[in-house]
View (cartoon, helix red, strand yellow):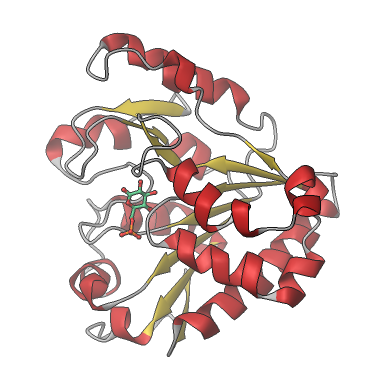
Length: 255
Ligand SMILES: O=C1O[C@H](COP(=O)(O)O)[C@@H](O)[C@H](O)[C@H]1O
């Protein structure tokens, strides 16, 4: 069963998420000398600022020179565009770290030199290119995921038009065309990558997530990408939620 950790405030959630990241770092570094983490965009990034930048204890215990940061999904825009997930990570987390840490950490952004006309099929090459830089044999040590109000995660959307994203069994990164949430062109990791990851953490906060938390945890709606990840990965998955997001969830079977 997936684990749910519920907190009254973002600060407490971030403290616990920081300890969880350190635990997964120790697990990764016990068998190799890299800690490969893929992060999402959206509201998660501000929580990462709290646990990686503001929390001085976590900040001092991260093995920055062993940390490789990838993106679970990315919007097909330039890296300094307000919609870029890398751009958000850079301004909210990376730029706030000391110069010494910035020199140690390795971040893998989208190769934006491959962006053509945003609607052109050649953009498939951006997905192929990002796939080529993902960690190979052992996959990711940790995925840090968000959950949209419609149950999407990464850029895996639950509507019928985007079923092809959920049904991908071969490619590790695919192009999400016509995303229901702007901007329309994105790339995303797929289930073969997610299911090959050692540990997965979701972060969901705030009142706007109440209806979707009910669908995921009470109704266990199997067509949602988030539920599909819960079902396929079970013991590897931890949800970090706040009281507001979980207020309408009736079951207490997860904690
Ligand atoms: O579009 C996206 O949305 C999801 C969820 O974002 P949130 O702000 O509702 O937490 C995010 O995880 C994903 O990376 C992003 O591209």
